[in-house]
Amino acid sequence: MSAPYSDRHPASVESSAPDPDTPNPATDPHAVEVRVMAVPEQLPVMRAVVGDLAMRADFDVDTIADLRLAVDEACSSLVRIAAEQSPLVGRFRSAENLLEFTAEVTSPEASGPRTNTFSWRVLSALTDNVASSVREAGDNADGHVVRIQLSKGRMVHE
Image (cartoon, rainbow, N blue to C red; front, side, top):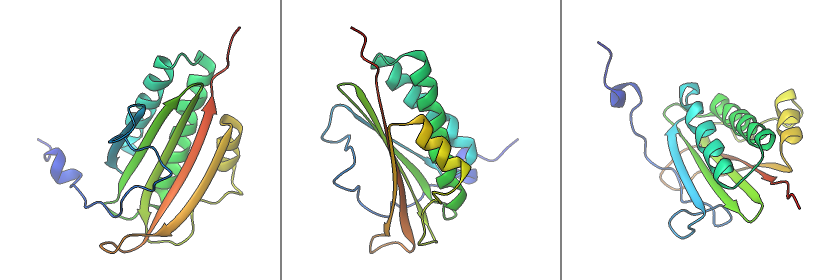
């Protein structure tokens, strides 16, 4: 018999408040936030959420596939540099013809994901906009908050 989920993936303390420029599900009815442990086994959750949101926003099948791949690639990049026991926080926001995604982890490194890699080229090809940022973690945590933001527009058919 395996250990309970909480023993395998213990809860962690949030390291900082959300950035005011990211979607806030507490005040925005079009925003969704998902928190999972920053481990590869949790990536299907993020893919499923973006797929569902894109489907509900009437994105075409190809764009939904691009979004799933982009979210997976962004989260994979962050999982690789995440501190042990760090949560992976994903914030999704669907607007008029746009889906925005912001993912962040706490990392011991002050550098963000490398932008000269094949992974970053994939992200750039699959999305309309992609950016990363790094800032110091809050007063209660060590390390840095590393963030990747991306967005993809919906094709409008007339």
